[in-house]
Image 1 (cartoon, rainbow, N blue to C red):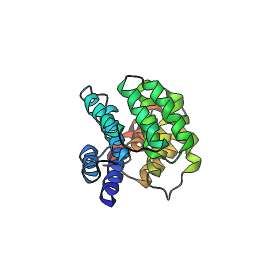
Image 2 (cartoon, rainbow, N blue to C red; image 1 turned 90 degrees about the horizontal axis):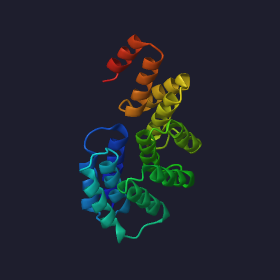
Image 3 (cartoon, helix red, strand yellow; image 1 turned 180 degrees about the horizontal axis):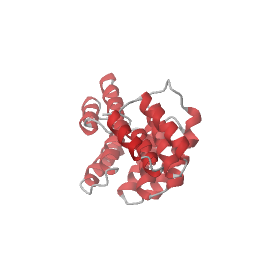
Image 4 (cartoon, rainbow, N blue to C red; image 1 turned 90 degrees about the vertical axis):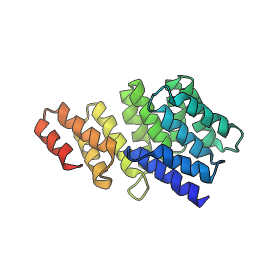
Length: 207
């Protein structure tokens, strides 16, 4: 329904920026449309990617709720990635999300979930390359572009490309001042390049 789509998109924005309460927002989407597969997927990711044990039963309940619903190929890949994470198979889930992003590079949720899997498994190369492969399919006019740029900035920083990381991170925050990855990436660059005064000014200048 239009109401559920609006709530779903808002929840994704809240997750991208790490603001407000995306769980409550996606619950609104599900209340409006209980058969919305991607809302079940998003709720599961929200409870899994924080790595809190209490999130596992919620994610499994989301899988159960989505199990009998019609789903397209992309949704099935998401559900399988969620299933692998609930089974503790994080790297395997990361590979599923990599394949999904190769086929659907504008799926912002797949990119973010994959990026967080790479972060949690310590895969610095994929932190950069997962996002870099999708970037040619994105542009400023697309919702969530700031988050893709911010994730790319973090991946660049973790790979030691500090000049490009700072450039991308600053662009991300310019497009969306509350973009957490972009803010984080620039702060990391300043730490790694021994620029504490710049770092303090950066963190204080965007509150």
